[in-house]
Amino acid sequence: MPDFIVEYGKLGKPPAPDGRLDGPAFHRNHDAIWSAIGGFLSQQTGDVLELGSGTGQHITAFAGRTPHLTWWPSDIVPPHLASIAAWRQHTGLANLRAPQRIDLADPHWTWTADGQAGGTLTAIVCINVLHISPWSASQNLIAGAGRTLRDGGRLFVYGPFMRDGAHTAPSNAAFDATLKAENPDWGVRDVRDLNERAELAGLTPADMTAMPANNLVLAFTRAVRQN
Ligand SMILES: C[S@@+](CC[C@H](N)C(=O)[O-])C[C@H]1O[C@@H](n2cnc3c(N)ncnc32)[C@H](O)[C@@H]1O
Image (cartoon, rainbow, N blue to C red; front, side):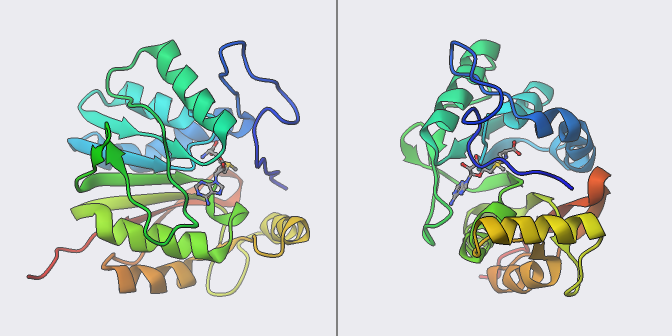
């Protein structure tokens, strides 16, 4: 069964002296995630926002592979924001920008680019966040993607998901029970429910890519806006 970490560095590996945190799942999943999102992102220019960046390791790895994109990390936990800033400093990547605080509990969340209101985004990435936050965070993520993605832009979401009311593996069912025991508002989300929200937000239904350990990458595309 997968485990979950809400705050890196609290238990397990402490931060490096400069504040860099190391998430164990990153080492297991980042190549697989890139295999699902890299085909699109390698062909694009513009801005990519990550929500719930955690340690900052995914966005650092992805920014290193795409100098033609500008990457904007975010989170809500101060040690995570410090870790992201430390990874940025450590790698010196010019296309990885300073972390900002974006809370998916806020239905009106938005993003900024160096202090200015952010424009439309090429993509949004959100990894292992929706099951450790209330359903409203999933709703707010998708509604915000509808507002902020450019036409044809994509929202990529990684994690464990249910399909049509059923878990895809016994290990995901056990994980869901563990999450709900920790917090009744958490839990493995259903692609069907996310697709309903996507339709309301002007996004296509999820295109799904199977990942190791019964995870999925969901890719929602912003439909062309009608004037
Ligand atoms: C399990 S961690 C995943 C972190 C990182 N994406 C990864 O996969 O390594 C979940 C992350 O979501 C963040 N998070 C939780 N609730 C959030 C919210 N309401 N808005 C934005 N981020 C949130 C946490 O601070 C944490 O960094």
